[in-house]
Length: 470
Image 1 (cartoon, helix red, strand yellow):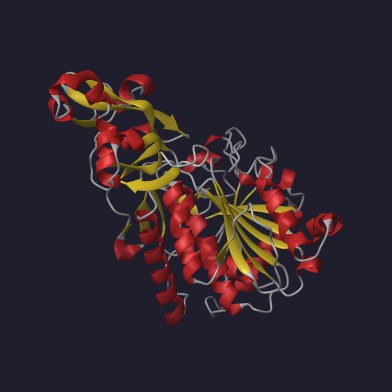
Image 2 (cartoon, one colour):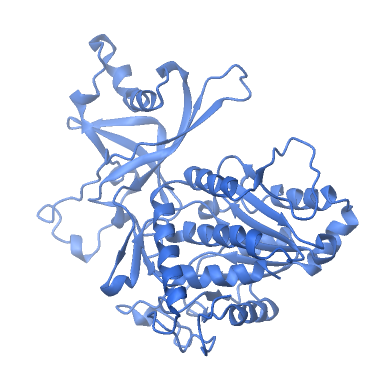
């Protein structure tokens, strides 16, 4: 471990928001880690691209891709991954004594709030082609207006086997969409708060209607409706008739960046929750090289659809994770008894982002629990059990932070405010192991662009590295 902090209390009342307490080596590593995160965010506009980018990183680090339909035979030291529905991933490394030490799981999710394009996508009005979309998750709707947007996702194409269509990822990259606000002259109470009607107001503009006319003018109506498919076919170099379906989400095209004096902050879409995905990925790859003596099965678990409830085959509220973990045990010569005995010996860190106290709205935070940007990982607790943390699992994470030389903070919602939830409670109900909910502090959660600290990615990754080394 780097000598990052000489003496620093793991208490939310004392935080460091600068790099003065870090060694020169740690400062350089923290900067590089944030730069890598911004690059990962820029090239991961949707969960599908994020998982594909993680796959490339794992491949380069020597992890093997496993087909879930094939027989699995593993031994100590093996490392690999499974991908579920192209948007969820479980990566692992087998430790030195796996059947006796269980699992060390770091869990996150791959999806973020956005607008999803409807099947009949083209919605003309007043000579303008708009895209019909529905809201995915719970975005801050007003933050999506007046920003250059693009589309990314996946497209399903015809194949020789009707049960296995060809899948192609696509990222249009260009700012092809815009969602203009209504001028204040036409709604003079806009700055007093204006209701946004999803069906009426959330239709991004694509182009003028005559630009969508097909080359063959005799096709007009049907041709205009196929305009988006023609764009996709052109980018994918395929026939229009080969496109069977698609899943496309909007994203803001301006690149993620450092901001604030001396790059104190980072600004990007999808910090929630790709920043936790990347932290776990970096830690697992690092541990596979630097912690050969680790005893347990190290697992990076990234599920999809957390923003809409996780009740999907690739979500945390499903059995695919439990089934895969059991297969890992059995592939090592264990049986179901060994699998069940692994739970009390295992531990899971459920990582989703946390709310930093907002300087303009300090009253929104609980008086005694006020996480700050660049103050280190935040332990999240709730009497409602919307987080999985309890006294035991919080104690474990505090010791992990101390072992990694990292400060940590605590978050609890105000008693009169209902907070969000994470994959932690549902995962621990299916995988009955001690679980803690944590996350890096940010402002503007679910905004089109969220704001976090440039030091916090480093802090979180250091804790996970230490966790995976045990």
